[in-house]
Length: 160
Image 1 (tube, one colour):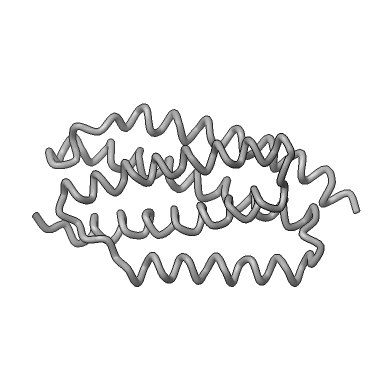
Image 2: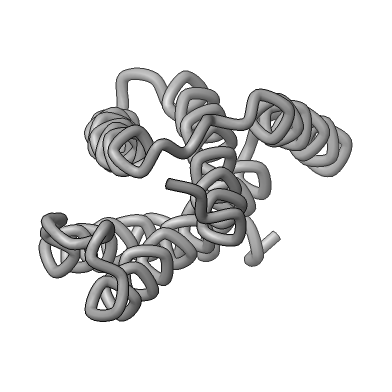
């Protein structure tokens, strides 16, 4: 089966997961041995599981993973990290704040992915059989968790 627009959309989200996982790994390392690092590790594991669900859906649909998109996302994350290093070379509060914000926005995009696929599944049988509601709820819970940490980081980063 070929779904060119759907394939592009799914690959864009798969690439976004590459960037999110890279950001989370870096933030987790920067916050080592803190409660936040534990939360970030759990979140990274959950996002990896979400990514696996997306990869399984893509495989079922016969959608080939786009290596160039994944590479571009990886490179984009590295450029974003360079920007954060220039803004906050000490790996301090601003870097944490902006990193959490990027992850939060990515999770919101993922929630939108699951909502869009759920809506299209009613007209496209190939998209059925996925528990979109569970994935949407998990994304919402992830976003709440990240936003709480982000707001705490804002208190430190933006008070300087």
